[in-house]
Length: 168
Image 1 (cartoon, rainbow, N blue to C red):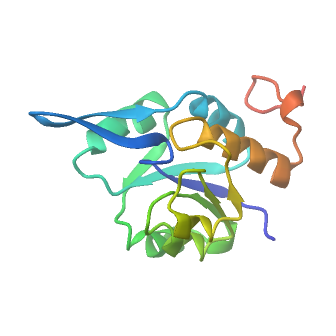
Image 2 (cartoon, rainbow, N blue to C red):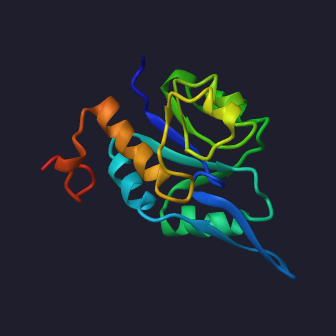
């Protein structure tokens, strides 16, 4: 297995609970989980990290959290275009993809390493190399990051310092 160099994550259902909160004005809120940003910071010293979403109506909400607060690239990419979008930018064998939705298997079956949160679609989970014990929006991304650091970079989570994944 090739060591991955990029981690691409779907936003809704992975970084969030997948719930959308609406008011009479439309989509207003998404619920993002705790600790995921910290774990991504640890992993970012070893892999490029990017996010994708197909949620046009909730894009501003996702941009606020992913791009403005956390500082990562976020791209609007439809579910059916994702694998081609990835293949146009990266060698698929160096990509780790984390997704939960019904169509995320289309990407997962074609990349080097695939991760699904516990509450992912059952078909999608069949294409995952690793399934987290936690659900999307509830530290699943944090768990995935720790798994990648241990599996591909031989880092013991207990020895990671808060200084961007430098072993203590």
